[in-house]
Image (cartoon, rainbow, N blue to C red; front, side, top):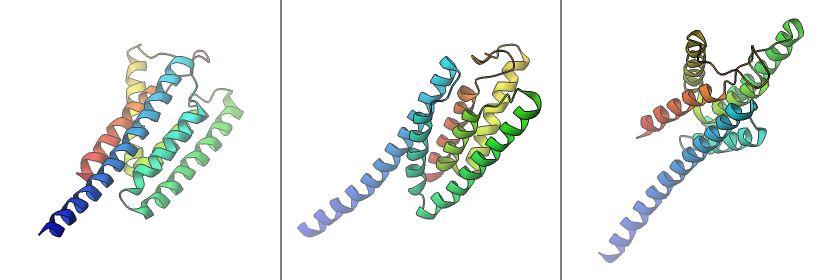
Length: 172
């Protein structure tokens, strides 16, 4: 009887520890996401250290679903970063203004590690819709690089938070 109670406590502690680690990874992911967005709002640049922290925490967050999910998310993140940087350089070569900075592509690639395909598209759609809506009504804050540049980090952050909460709700 006593061995049964100890075994039950051990199983509950293991389950709670896994849930606690999943929550900790999700909170770290959101913390780095918010920190980077605030830095982008204040200075017009998404700090690489915050984006790397976000990617690391996002990868840990994703592995709690299934370890193979991280590989799928990593391929998506590499595709987003590669295509994004190629587009940035191509647009910049022809127009001298890219409007969507390289840091924003890194930010979304880091988000892809934690959110996967659907979550990343949801985050991008919400972020871009919010930025376009505020630009249309004249409340858009331009980046520190002058007119034509927008600090998208805070808007993308709103989408990332929404997608992260949706992902966490789907797990429970």
